[in-house]
Image 1 (tube, rainbow, N blue to C red):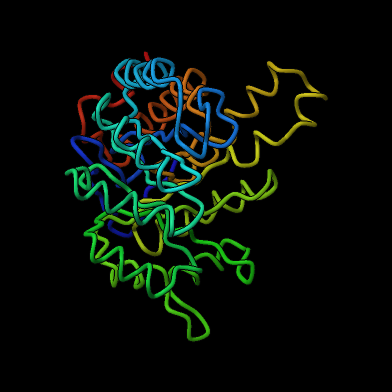
Image 2: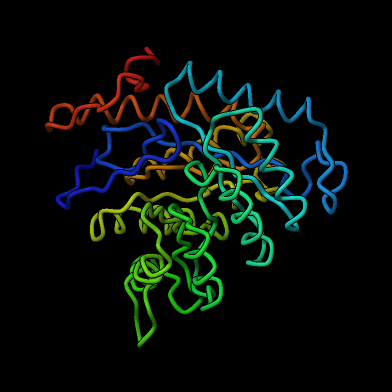
Length: 307
């Protein structure tokens, strides 16, 4: 198990969701996606029409699992356009106190939704997703003017695909401003680093990058292994559903065992699988790290719940 020499930053998002710290101090924050492309509860992605009862049931179930296992939950709220994303944000605000990611394919989608969140008093629960190497002057200006305080940084560039290169993206290289400085310039206080998973083989690279981010910068870090595992059709065909589910859980554990503070686990329906697995891994990490002077900082830690 890991213990980092560098002091680890800890941030609170919303009311009571803590992310960061040494492995074993705080549970892994689990982030499930809702209203994403292909989500069957969405009737019309352009207008933001969806089955409200089904969406609420999915969210309620994550809250039940979170209480049972001890891992906090956040919602990755995905919209294809600003109109739809704003509708989704309003719905989330009405049915849950969980923090949420404002997630859209472009600034033209994310910025209006972030502005709306600020206007209705939700900015304390919101995480902008994301600031990356393509973030321009106008987007930075808008983020700062709106008053966004929490954001994901997508630590990836096609010029810097290896784990060490993702640190360069965060720090800056070849005259380019690093994403950390860019985020500070945008007024971001709570920085979460997504080390970017592209395909199944890159899960290990992203997990190693998580380790490097925490070692060198002390920032909360994680990634979305589901970006790869959900497209691994050969796995299902070759090994069957049961083995596939086990493999899907294994890639989440790889991130945790490299110090990950959060896991973007993909479709919210996967919460049934993810919470028990990640809760158990957190408990094992915390139990082991007690020997090295690291103790859980919250009473609701999985170590007190899963066995």
